[in-house]
Length: 366
Image 1 (cartoon, rainbow, N blue to C red):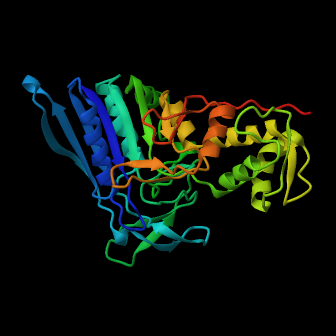
Image 2: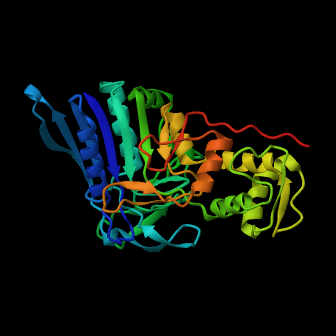
Image 3: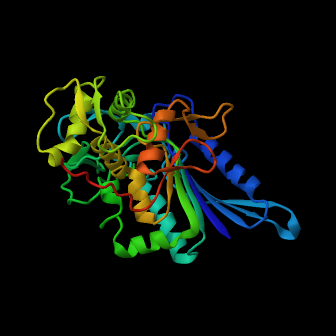
């Protein structure tokens, strides 16, 4: 039986989209594509409803049969789950409120993958996540990574109290439900034995798909400035071609300099223009993608991850079906394909494919 896990996050601003509908559409699409009538199992993880449902699709006598059962329940997420609060640093934040420990977490997705690795290794065909996203990964509920989290203590009759926890260097914030690439694939979240099961779950041709956005505006704007520079072409630009980016702003220069200062040793003299060789810019945008959660997940699973390339965003199909990357990023896509070696998803939805172990060659000076 081929396994699939499809998780639906929460539209935490409650602007109308129900990601579980898109997740269900994905399940129906995969079922329609199953012309060989192989037995399928779907684990549908609905964060908003707090419910995990197992759906088996079988074909006894050649006739499709579906059976469904709820296999786990969690706390539901509603408007009251989101609010404005002050964190341990005194910063006011609006998002998922602390102390909601019964709500589904990204760690529950990881546990479901490991369970397949333990009990049905080599059968996990696809892990899909429908929800909002950023370069740091999946936004289940818009929670926060507080390194000194305030933990509510259940009341025993007196006034509510809290404690401030001290976390280890790789320990997740217990209030945090969203993905964190720097903590999720190391102990204590997943040690070497856990990662072995994590990888063992996937079929030879298995993959993950992150359907949300990956749109750091600074990367988008800096790439736009590079693509408009004299001497740049969507293919064939030589590494030593000198480009002058005169449409950058201070944020762009600061971001690019953060990658290049250890190499060039000298800061850029201006905050409104950059003149440098193309090979350095190519390295910056490659290295940024290598640091993204999609690349981290690909390495952790040992399988490709389909995700929006940095500087692009996803939007909903019309009529509502699933999602695709906005079609206005052709220049970005051409750069990634021709200069970073990225391929695109085979369904033509505009997502890039992150392979395990994405590395970027550090350019030499001069």
